[in-house]
Length: 206
Image (tube, rainbow, N blue to C red; front, side):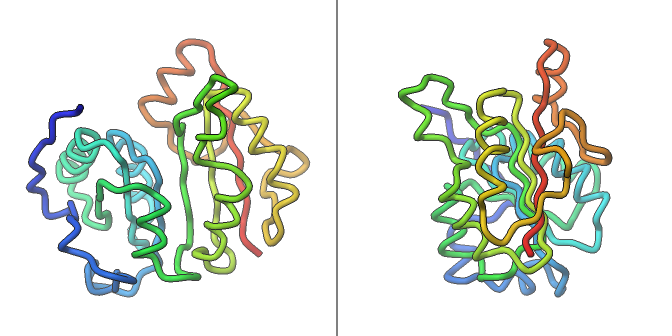
């Protein structure tokens, strides 16, 4: 069991800080569009991306307490204030706290690939999950998925063309191993240094 770290950052939200379909404009103090990163790790991707888009509000979620703490520390170090961090499970959090048609972007970077065939049904990103996400994404919202695991990348790239209401932004490709302007996390850089490819999928809700 992981040791729970007490996170005192003003950027970290606890259960008592949010209730129901959260009024994110109240929490952020503005009406800026809302973006979500599922699995923020240690926060290096979200810190760079939030700095690139100061006109957006970002929610960064992860199940690991230590990662949430490191994410908050990184954001504070760089003076980034347009991110809030939560330790939550993705589907439950979205269902309870994200208004429908409200997200302008969703980022999912290197989720657990569950490499053994008998475990692959546990993968977060599948056709049903993308259909679930669609209801919370506004028209024109961007969906980004990245993985170092080839089978996972091929799987997502394979089912996305059949997802109703999405447009492939990488045509004629289904996926690519490079995406201009998309920041690499520490884990991506580690995988690339090992000679692995990062598989990127990019779609837009239409």
